[in-house]
Amino acid sequence: FFATTSTMQMADFYKDLGKLANDLLNKGWASTEKYSWKVESNIKSTDGVSITPTIQSANKDSIDGSIKASFPILRLQDFNLLLTETANLNQSLKLEFTTSKYLNNAYKPTLEFNTTVNAPFSSSKAKFSTDIKQSWGGATVSWTGPGDHVFNASVLTSKALDNARAAVGAEVEYTKKSPLKVNLSTSYYTPTLTATIFGKFKVGKPNDTVVGLNVINSVISTFNADTQVAGEIQYDLNGKDTNLTIGASTKPDSYSTIKGRVTSKGLAGFAYTQQFNAPLNLTLLVDLDLTKLNNPRALQYGVKLNLI
Image (cartoon, rainbow, N blue to C red; front, top):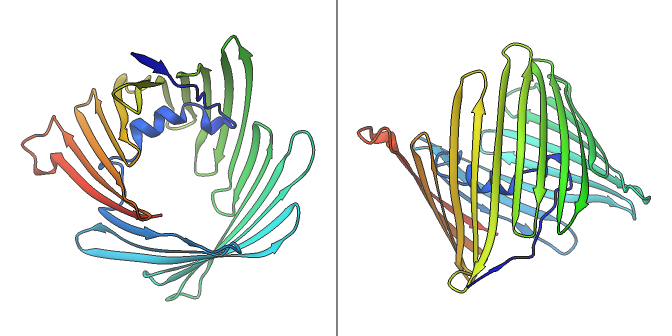
């Protein structure tokens, strides 16, 4: 006996097209995690103050950490100003000023303005960065500078079908130091399945073109509370290279999650997450490169401990 889910998750912006399958297949694995271990806690108060201490290690010889605190400076009905301070053990202080304004009209556009100051304690030179983002429904435009002057624009449109929905989106990104990037995607949604065809193009030197398809399906059975199965195939037109990834995620109960994946390039992965009664979860990660079994580095593993 199988019963299908009824949670069709639609995309609100271009970056959401194919995101469910991409997250399951390409994120949260031992080979994709940056740190060998990381402990993070997030403490929030009723007045909006947030404090997040973090300690982590990227290799056996170094340990670094930070403490981040966010304070609402000004709150009005349609305006919010937030100050975030981050002090790192590598002797630097980072200040972020974020403003958001929500305009009350049919399209509900949002304007976000973020300024970052990164000041190393050992140097008098501070780096400034500014992000400006404007959204109108499924369209967004953003700019980051100074420096590379990253410009990004995307648009998404969708249409209702019989018990389904289709969405088409495009994204353009320009950076002063890299080629122009153009991404195109189209997704087809049903209550249990999402299929996304995508193309990624780099215009300039070097040229690069990748096309692919990813699919994710969700089912409920009498033996399993929640299962998702996903697959993705990518083809690099320049390197004439094809990569296939298949993965699955399942929740035996409300406190644990098991997921695994295998790729056509011989990489196999496993992850197990256990949620405890306290605001704590533990994740065990194992990746094995089946093409390099005689190499000690063929096996990668990690442990994630999160205080939420």
